[in-house]
Image (tube, rainbow, N blue to C red; front, side):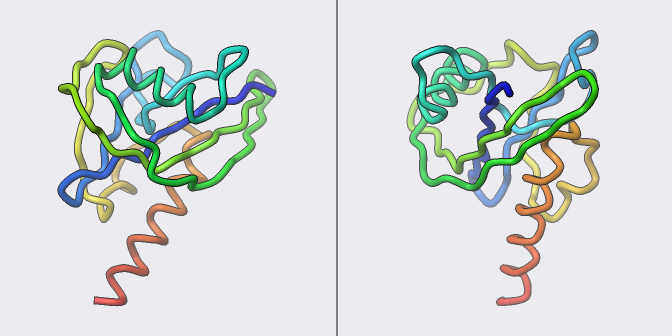
Length: 134
């Protein structure tokens, strides 16, 4: 099973999501930025490397969110997700078609990749609980 990492980057009350390019697996769907683990890397190291390569930013891991297995006839992965903050650099579009900062309240309005759906559900529940506490 391939390990794939995902970043939940929150800034100013919004979360960064990325749209996959045409021709990619899950083309034109949204995801949380990240990438595939390489030999010798921890999931956290992988995520920081991928964010540097794909978005042009240096990051800090703020906390582990969870691990989510996904299996289909053509893909078997474990999505490992972290809360992440950007510490330096400017977002650059290189591996995705589009980047967008969105309010957690509207995350459900976007079509996400299947492997990202369990993470999306957790974020929506977290947001709903915060709203109830206000």
